Amino acid sequence: MRLIRRAGLRTRVTLAYLAAIVAAIAIGGVLVNAALEARLTDALDETLETRTAAVGRLLVDRGGPAPGLTVGLDDPGETFTQVVGPGERLVSSSPGLPLRPLLDAAGRRAAVEGRDIRLRDVVVAGDDDGADEIDLEALEETGVEAYETDRARVLARQVRAGGVRYALIVGSTYEDHDEALREVRGALLLVLPVALVLVALAGGGAIVASLRPVERMRQRAAAIADPGSGERLPVPPGGDELARLGRSLNEMLDRLQRAAEHERALVSDVSHELRTPLAVIGGELELALQTLGDADPELRASLTVAADETRRLGRIAEDLLLLARADEQRLELQREPLAAGELLREQARRFAARATVAVQAPDGLRLDGDRLRLAQALGNLVDNALRHGRAPVTLHAWADGDAVVLAVRDAGDGFPAAFRERAFDRFSRAHEGRSGRGAGLGLAIVALIAEAHGGTATVHDAPQGGGEVRLRLRAT
Image (tube, rainbow, N blue to C red; front, side):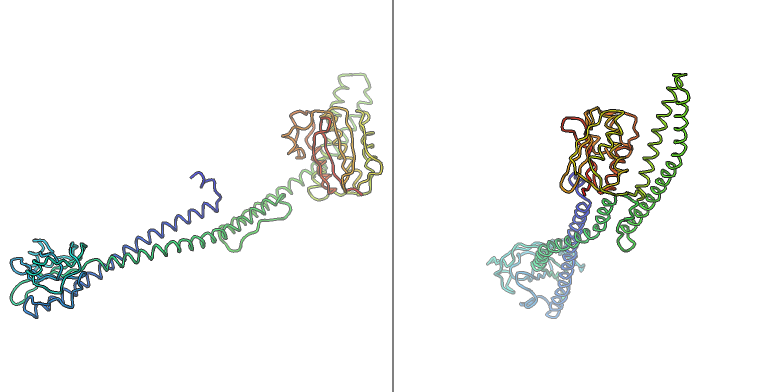
């Protein structure tokens, strides 16, 4: 059961279908056998009724039992006749039968008294060497037995012939009955497995065909990375459950797309609206610091913290605006051939006031990109290295086939293994091993700019320890 529960839906449905088919075929075989057996028994009873009527007419026409009474009516070894006269004496019997009435005393009395004896089963015994009609004394002397031990179907009636009442017993063995059942059962044993295999193949094929639209929807769902891409699940034709499921899922994707578009528009609008007031607040704080001088150290410290936080909020607003524009496919690039070494040295000079940043780049190494966006990406990486890692920070560039790799290395503790998979997710921060007050958008911006250039951004361990982030961009 545990293995079945772990199996796929297709396997479970197929096994359940096969179990139901096996049960249905088994029940059908039992019912067919029972119905056939009942029909053969009815046919045997009808034959006995006909033979009883025929023997009764002969008995009446001949005025009583006479030699050869049942010649032509009995089939030796299969059908038989007995006539029981007054005093319950056996006066006529088919060859090979026991030298006693087949019915018990109660049955014979009922027949003699004129009551019909219901059809019943008896047991006869003998071999196949009897004559059609022999004298009872001769039969007694020779001990001939014409019937093998077998079940028989018997009908008893009271017949008046020549003024005497006789109990007429007509019977037939089950040999033909049982042979017909054996033949039918053998045919069923041959046909039913073949039918089971064919039905199983047809049912399995139908199940596979029915679940194929589900697999197509699953594959498409796995390929849809963004509901805003416009891709939707393939909906099978018709109005069945699978078609309704596909339409419902597509409607859900439409709602997700509208919600995402609304969210991006909100972020873009809010970020755009925050830029101006934050810039004004920052300017006013800088002016206040310049005007204040050293008159009030505590006030100056408070204003400095406020100015730093305002600048941080301004950077977050700029980053959110950039992400919103990228999501809306409105991130435009001004591509031009750039010298990799010069691009890195510009960042080294930019951060020279905070720390010494070394540059290692060969001359003549050029790439195709947007100077401002790449400077923003490299600036985010250097800022992260200085805030979350440890100096020295080194900028590297080298050629790798038809690409140029730009790398920023620090001497910190590196990136935690658990953080690497989500390093470029938005608002993702490495709480283990690195600390700081960043919003978790710096690496997301780096990955976005790299992808916009048709490149990639990856995190690594630096050769001498620490963390390293690489940008792989197209060379010119």
